[in-house]
Image 1 (cartoon, one colour):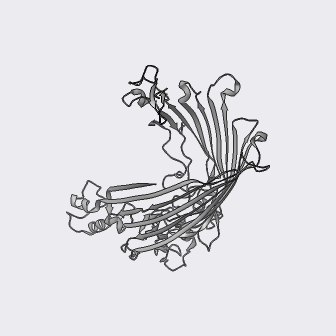
Image 2 (spheres, rainbow, N blue to C red; image 1 turned 120 degrees about the vertical axis):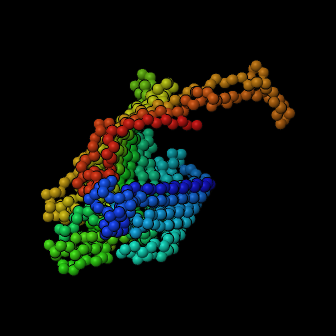
Image 3 (cartoon, rainbow, N blue to C red; image 1 turned 90 degrees about the vertical axis):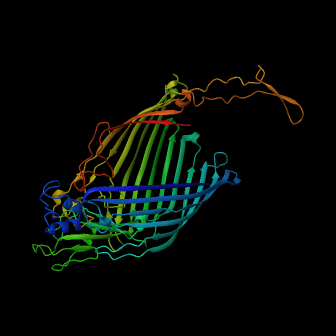
Length: 584
């Protein structure tokens, strides 16, 4: 049983941004003392009054608070021949609150150089309960052939949501939105099985495991508010060459959203062969079917799904075009409205695999020289499909770069793997606290944003656009990390004599039956906090380096903002760090 409370507050001052109404008025002003000359520079020709009217400081703030009350009870219900039937039951109450106060210019989309958005307040109350029961049908102490150990776990979780969004003021193309109250609940089960068919003494430990899970994910508070926020994605408009590569997009929340749901099943095997001590192999196949996903469609998708009528100026509801210069039948895209919605779904399938080998030096019979642990693990993404809406076909997204505007997931390379080797010092020596090793991270190559690069209108065939020569792949990336940990484990101090006791260390104590018994005191003395050994004991010193060879992330042409895949890589290059941790 417990209670937690957290609160985050933030202030954002954006200096030197341009006010659209201030710039417009200053450009039209005929008074030399207050008129603004856009060719005069920041400090030259324009007066202080003119600069103050155009260049402003934007004030934005936000608050998020989260109180949580929770309680959990667990124990054993009764005993079966194979062991006790255990249970856990618990409840939780959460009450998140999110407030975003925008500057007046941001709130009305009247700034230049800043990302505009509307102010909002959202709060939510969540009541939840969960139950879990584990039943051992067979176990190493009670079993029969083919079922050395077999246990099943049943679990369920149910939550009730009540949420409120604040009124949103009208702005430009958007009408005002009234405050909205909404409620919903979600109830989902989980069943998992763990089965060891054979006694490990025959061929080693073989464990088969599987699970079926129904899950849900409630919309975030930011997704619920009808307030809009501004974005500038890169697009390729196949209907008009006049459209700029980067356009304005306004993303809207939706207070009527309901939880996303997912259906997941996994099955796998873990094997530790008897004849190779220290080796463990595992593989798990997983399948995830997500439905009612909360996401935006993205500007590129909305442009492709809403073609204009030649000769008619397109005016919504999602894509807005201006008249253009008459050089093509359709004018350029000037704005895209991208509302959040419970989209149809996505399917993911893949294989997780791992091999661990622990080489214990004692097996050679020449003493303890420590242990060497080698690990290889990775993921193969077999299938990834996204369906933007129920009236469109699924689109394969496995092995592709996904722009940051695609909120569902990061980019999806087919293959990712990690290779590591670590050495732990021998026990009962000064080296027992030593842990040193290296980790290699590998990401295989994958497709760039070829639908945008080639101008393809077929999202399932991104290389089929008229500019097919621009299609490319993102190169593979391999990086190396080094890590050294040392934990000080000092021996406890020698027991000290306890004052008041005889030299033999005992004392006669009268028991309940009236007899006396000699009791030897037990010293619990440890290092005091005024002793330097107390501070050093159980202290871990860490020294590490990431990306030792200083590799640059591979170039991604579809990443307009920075030229690399920020969802998988970083541009910080070689990075070293130190750490100090004390365990009390």
